[in-house]
Length: 245
Ligand SMILES: [Zn+2]
Image 1 (cartoon, rainbow, N blue to C red):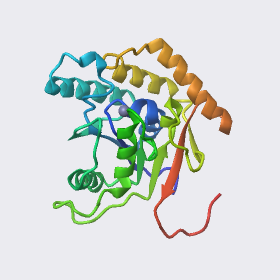
Image 2 (spheres, helix red, strand yellow):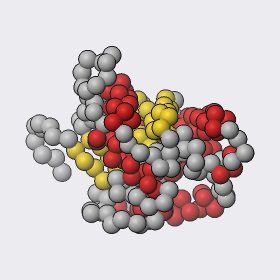
Image 3 (cartoon, helix red, strand yellow):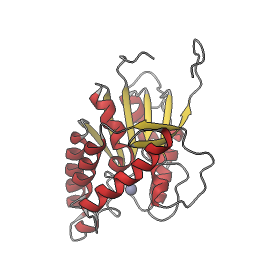
Image 4 (cartoon, rainbow, N blue to C red):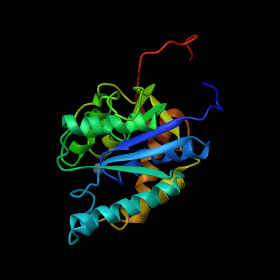
């Protein structure tokens, strides 16, 4: 792929606020280089990350979460944030919900999908996260009635950031790709605070910013940059001209 080719990038997460701490720096980099970046949350996260909205109705929570996360995405340069309305905590992948995720992939036709979550994150709140990650490659991408062609992304990247928050199942392999987010670290922090600040219980913006810099500096140190976001990649089968480093 040439450096100048513009990509379509689809980020998929379980709850509307998840994308920002997980993959925010990477999304901002893609948006900054002119790629078409789309975000999808498969739930509104009614029952998780929304402790400050407990006195609201479900419809009110949806409106607030949609608005705040849509605005937070704009800080990253992402202007297309989509939402599916599956119930959360627990999120249960059904035939119908998998078809819906497949329709979004067919509709947006991404070159790459970035999963906000790692497929083996299971415990506690992370359960929805692991389910969402597994929905991505289970979703049938040939059933959209209005789109002629099936669509499979060339590569799925799974963020391994979830493991910072509790290593509950062993990772079979360590992260193999790190995106240098030094240039977008502050954008990411700003988006996280915009998304989490008024909905999540016990969220302290200053402490969050400090902790986030420490986390990403740790990953950056592994690969010799200041700040990085970690991923594992799964590539689909394809023909190539030759092997590259
Ligand atoms: Zn979440």
